[in-house]
Length: 157
Figure 1 (cartoon, one colour):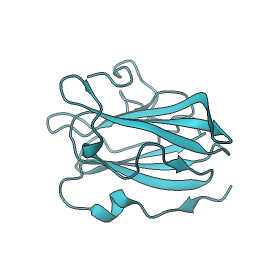
Figure 2: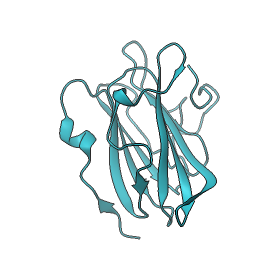
Figure 3: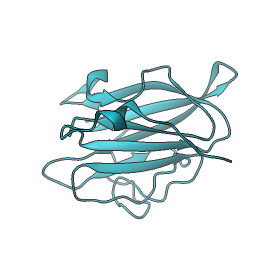
Figure 4: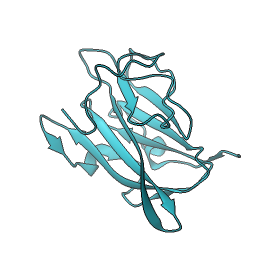
């Protein structure tokens, strides 16, 4: 499947405020809809102003690559849903990521096929790569293996 790179609003904004970026490639063979993005500041909170990139409802086409950036150092979450035509199927691709100031970078794909790739545990900004449709090879507890024992529940503090 060809991967088509699309310029991203997140990538074009740049600047020192971006702490964490998700590079997302849709390898599922079907279109996916962005259901929502969240950040957490002491409680579950929907906050689209700390995410740069795509609006809720955006359709990520099969084979397409986009970037989404989060300017918050707290946990950032996003959820995509598989589409059949224009209707959601209930099959979700969810991920969370963080780039804290006082501990290690972490990310996780909340199902086996979110395709989280190996990442750098230290440094700001950080880019996490997700290949939707591929198996995860990294996790919240390990930048290069599957150890999700310490990961928060999706959307949790």
